[in-house]
Image 1 (cartoon, one colour):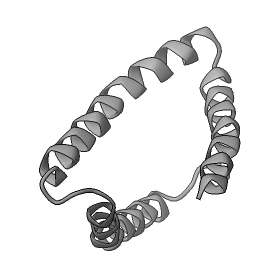
Image 2 (cartoon, one colour):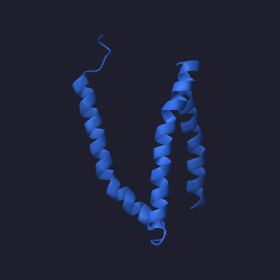
Image 3 (cartoon, rainbow, N blue to C red):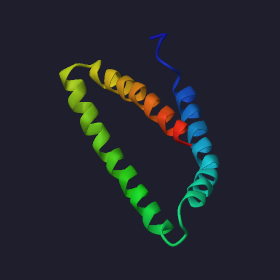
Image 4 (tube, rainbow, N blue to C red):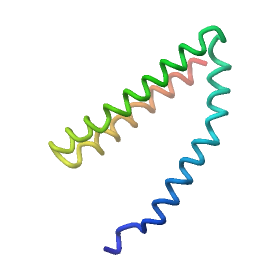
Length: 96
């Protein structure tokens, strides 16, 4: 049981992560508002929020199905998606 993290360490890490998310939200919103027209801001932000909630609902189901097939599959899928995102982000950066 020496590899099991301390409960209080996990709790502290979660609190720090949520605090960081809270601090970054105004900067994120400011960046979003600088990129989109003000007349469409509310509909775009509502769409983004809905999309994030749908992804948050679907992700555990997909991960559960993958884990049922093989416990390593969720990790391999995550790695594959991250590696696929790198060229996409680099190509978007070169467009600027």
